[in-house]
Image (cartoon, rainbow, N blue to C red; front, side):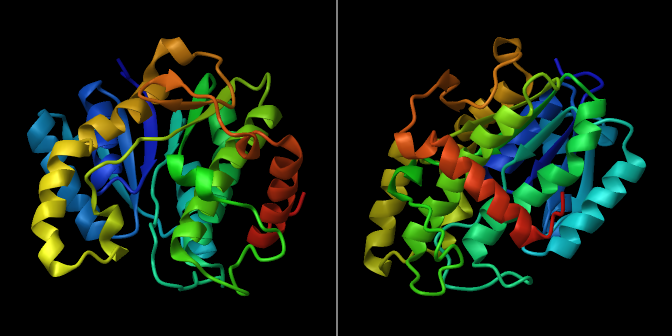
Amino acid sequence: MMNGKTVIVTGANSGIGRSTAAGIVKLKGRVIMACRDRSSAEEAAREIQQETGADSSLLSVRQLDLASLTSVHTFCQDIMKEEPRLDVLINNAGIYQCPYTKTKDGFEMQFGVNHLGHFLLTHLLLDLLKRSTPSRIVVVSSKLYKHGHIDFEDLNSEQSYNKAFAYSRSKLANLLFTLELGHRLEGSGVTVNALTPGIVRTNLGRHVHIPLLAKPLFNLLSWSLFKSPEEGAATSVFLACSPDVDGVQGKCFADCQPQVLLDKATDREVASKLWDISEVMVGITT
């Protein structure tokens, strides 16, 4: 049970994030739904309340646009001011294979939202997490990290852009971030672990073009082969609350089981370099 625990879930208005929020509320945890679209999040909160019978005090909606460093700063300032504790931060929100666009701060959108926005968010909330120990950070990655590569010469995809590669790179960055953060958090009472949810029926693929004639077949296959959002969220909920992962640090899970990652996702040297460059990109001065 999550009685008395406060959990932030980014992108909690739809898909895996919404199901993660519902799963935690069912366990009596309080969820702060951190979402770009406030009205959509408020509608999702009402639906979760109806579905779970939860008290309205267990769901709180906050505006957070991970494509804006200013929005991330404002969100975190409000949280630090208003919340006495933070037990779990779930970095769930993501953009998948969008056309080439840039965030408000000039970063390639997928790298900017999926990695840099969450990187800054975690950094700014770390003091509160440390004051709330034992606390946890959960990072949602993807098995598509396997196709990614960290090109330090072109992190912003200005020389070339492939939307599938850019997504995979952002998800590899999530795993390297988890690896480095886990190393830095040793002995702090805060743990960080990542997960790959598998192929889930969500609106994440809205930028992927499927020919009109193929859509009925695709929809049929997705219902038979893809996980439901609830199944996709199971590992996020597990990492947020299970005693089985007490003290587990810097690992990646799938279907609630630890995974063996490719060498590219466990390279400490690359993880450390990516961390340093990410700090510069989001304006962290240490």
